[in-house]
Every structure is written in structure tokens, then in C-alpha cells.
Length: 404
Figure 1 (tube, rainbow, N blue to C red):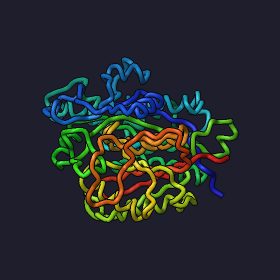
Figure 2 (cartoon, rainbow, N blue to C red):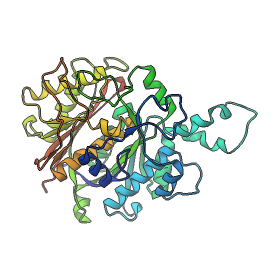
Figure 3 (cartoon, rainbow, N blue to C red):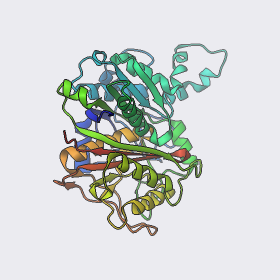
Figure 4 (cartoon, rainbow, N blue to C red):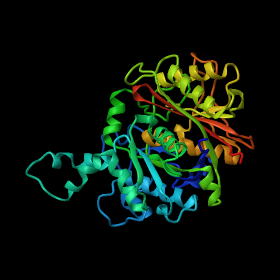
């Protein structure tokens, strides 16, 4: 029989906090991290709001413990900060003391730094230190540097499936444990803001010039963000063997592909519905036993309609409280699934449901509205965390209170 997969460590950095405790504090204070960039040289600097981690890259080097070392992009540094916290939170002083996998997610790797030297790189007459950043464009570069820095050498992989990337990384990690290939995997993702992604989403007319308003009738697109998050996954036997503190259980998961459109979901939410339904079935949890859904909730015109229809199809007239936390963190793309998985764990640990900021008017296509108030003291045993990406790929995680 396959092992149960337990979550024993959390680590993160986002625009609303440098660690898990900071994020929880900002969520409870309903303090958004959305503002204007201080680190990107762009014509949209004062026009398009973003959720940026409020530290320079030099400061991030110090926080990550690699001050003065070359070749670490902002993407890698964010990931390394989150990784170090996750290991410490799990009580792991030496990651090499047990064969440990690392499944990392990123959509554009070190683009944040390579785009700064693009014109130098394409000039054959130029040489200099900038050449060291060419290879960092590979999404796997940040994965390998983080793994090397903390001493992980087993089952290292990089996943890049757009906005579902780190949710898929968590699934992959869980499957390695269930298959008996390894007893511990650290999964999640890291993403830094870049001009490339800002210009790309803006050209798709998917960015709101105001703060995003998920599931609102007047929503007009997303705000991009940056950050990193990792969860330590361990087999139940390993967690018990080393007396680890269990945060929650990754009880079910599923990914589906509806193949409807390169950048738009099925209007009826076919893929989202199937992903959530299959995750619940895997975990043996009935829809009525779900207390909270952390929705993908990008605030784009098409996503929220599709996801809303999927919620109504799955839960009928008893849709549980749901909210998007992207008005706090922005849409952090490959890191979003990891960040929101941690928020799901925090909801269970602290009996809290986070509000959907900036909501004011019900969508005319739906019969449901998101949770707009912070709810404390609400028992939460099962949370669905959704992450949906371009290409019609949909990932749902079922995170549950651990009943040992």
C-alpha cells in the first residue's frame, strides 16, 4: 500500500512577507502587497501595479546566505530564501542526511537578469561578466543552484506548466513518495518579475491598471507578482521515524487538460471541474466535507467565469467559502501553486478563511460570491487549492488536516 504524503515544513517569501509568519500576519491584517515596481526598468513602472518583494537583489543575496557570490539570479535568490525556511521549519539541519528529491517550478527562469544584458549578449564584439548570466535563462538553472547550495542531489527536476507549475511540482513529489522511490521531496516554485512577463500579459490585455478584483462583475485582469514557496513532503513512516511535526496531509490531487484554447479555459470549466472532482475522489473526501476553496481566481474575464461554473457544478447549491488570495500577492505564475498550498495549510492550522479583497459586485454569470470577510475560529479540515494554466492545464490539490 502506498504511503500517505505528509507536509512537515513550509517556507516562503512574497510581497506580503519574508517568511510564513509574515505572510499569515499580512493575510490577517488584510494588507495587500500590490504597488509599483522599484526594481524593474520599464515604461510601465508607474502604470501597471505589481506585487513585488520589497528588497533589492543585493539584500536578497544576504537573506539567502550567498552575499558576494556571482551567478545567483533574483529568481534563484527568492527560491533559496524559501528553501532555507522550509528546511528549518521541518527540523532538517542537513538535507543530505536522507535521500531527498527537489521538484522546482519556474516559467521563465533567470529572465529577470538575462533580459538586462540581452543587447550585450547578441553583440558578438562584446565580452564581459554579463556572459555568466546566459545559462541562467534555463529554468533548470535556478533548480540546480538551489539544490547544490543546500546539498540536495537526488531526483532533481524542473516543471514549467505556466500557472499550474508548482501545483504540478507538488503532485510529482507526492507521486515519487507514493511510488517508494524516495521518502522525502521538497516541492514548490520560484518566480521573479520581469519585463518579459509584464509586457507579455499586457499585450494579452490581461493586466488591470487598478488592484485586481477576482470574481467581481467589474474585474479587468490580473496584477503580476513575484515570490517563492516550498513544502517539505515526507512519507508517513519517515515523519514518524524522526518525530517530525506534521502540518497537514496532501491527501488528493489531480491534473487535467481540456485542450480548449492556448490561453483561455473552457467556458463551462470542464477541466477545472474534472481536476477538483478527481482530487476529492483520490482523497476519499465528499464535496460537503470541504470547508474552503483557495481558488485560482486571477480576475481575468475568462478564468473566473470558468472556475465559477466548475465550482457550481461540483458543489451544487452548497459551494463552500472560497476566495482568491491573488489580491494580496499578485499572480506569481509558477510560484502561485506553492504559495497558495501553504495558505491552505495555514487555513487548517489556524482555523481561518482568508478574504477575497476588492470584491463589490456579483458576476452576472454566476450564482455565487467569494468570501469577503476574514473568518477566524472556523474549523477547517479539507481545503481545495486550484491552479490553472495556459494550454488548458488544470491542477487541484486536496490538503487536509492530518489524522494520525
